[in-house]
Image (tube, rainbow, N blue to C red; front, top):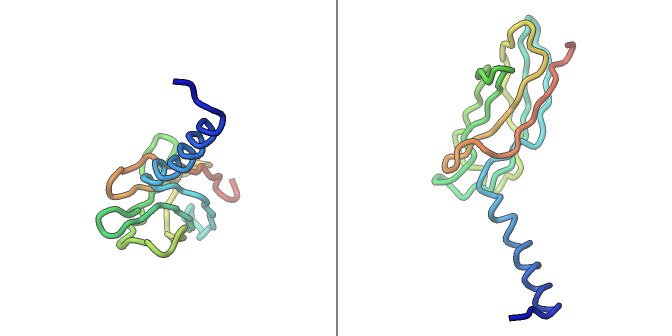
Length: 126
């Protein structure tokens, strides 16, 4: 069967419309800002995007990881953000070991776990 140019364009358009829905399943970290609180303690402000659907499927956590993938801080997200996308939450008092100059932030959702976009950020003053 040969596709006409119009049919090919319609097929391509349909595939492009479906692509965001397929990618919407995982929580993405969009932005991270870091402020100092003294003594190697930092405040992280993280913006996450996820197509929260309610209590059965929502972004439920983000974490800060060091260079060896060790978890240095965790922000539990205790409810869905269906009508607040993207959303931003902070976590203060995160102690970062000496010698660590940058960290990675990733988010998790209650169905897919981790796997969305992550952000690596340099620590201020280092």
